[in-house]
Length: 336
Image 1 (cartoon, rainbow, N blue to C red):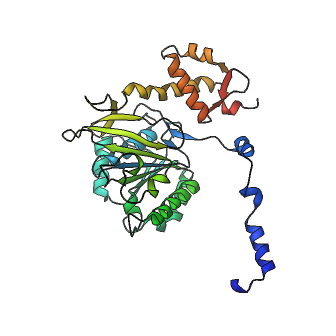
Image 2: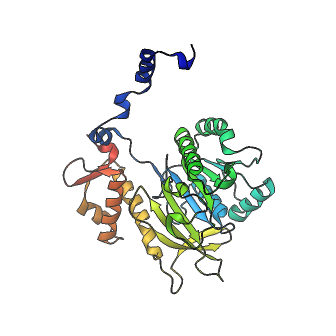
C-alpha cells in the first residue's frame, strides 16, 4: 500500500508506535537519578559525546596542536600539564594533507617516537558523510575515544559558508557521528572574522559555534611574535570557567606561559586546578570517603581555596558526590 493510501487509523497506529511518550517525556528527577556521569577525557575540554570546536587562522598551529594533543593521549602523557583520564585511541580525519605532509608534521611533533593507537584518514576523495559508516565501524571496532575532524570546511561539501541552516545540518551530523562512535570529537575551523571575539570568531554561519559544546579560540596576541599563541575558551557548556592562557610554541610542542607584557589573560598558575582534580580523584578512587578538611590535609602543597575550587568543579562534573553528609566520594560510591 502506498504511503498516501494509509487510512487515518493506520497512520495513527504507526505514529503511536514510532513516538513513545515514555521515551520523549521524563521528569527532571528521573534524568538526574539515571543519567550516566560525564566522561571527561582531557580536562574540561574533551569529553565523550561532546564536540570541541577549535577556531583559528590558517597556519596558526591548529593541526600541530591536534597532533600534540592526540599523541600525548596515546602515550599516556599530560598535555599542557593536564593528564588524560584514560588511555587514548585516536582517529584523525585529515581532509587536506597528503602523506608527505602528515609524515612531516608527525616528525616535527614527535621526532622519532613511535605513537601507538594513532590512526590517520587523509583521503580527499570523499566527504565526511560519505564515509560515515566505515568511521563508525572503525571507531567502535578499535575502541577509538578521540576523533579529530580537520577541518570543517573541507570535511563537508559546503555550498554557502554563511547559511545557518546548512551549518546546523552539518553540526547535527557531527553530533550523530560523535554519539554513534562514543568519542570526544574535536573539529577544527578556520577564522575569517579576526576582528570578532568569542563564539562569533569562526568563519561563516554562527550555528557552527552555537551547536558545539566547547569553543576554543587560538590567536597570535602579538603580530611580530608567532612563538606565543593565546588559548581562550569562548564557550563551555560543561563548566562555567573559561580559561584564557598563553602557550609558548617550541619545536612542535606547547607549554602554558605567563601573558605577554601588557596583554590580558590568566597566569599559568591557573592550570594547577586540573592537577588538583587529579590528586583528589586519586585519593577518592581508593574506595574511601573523605571529609573536606581531611582532603585539604592530604593535599598540603595546595592552597585551601584551590582544593575547594577543584572539589566544586568535580561535583559539577558528576565525578564526586556526597554519599553521606559532610563526606565526599567518587560517583561509584553512591548508594554504598
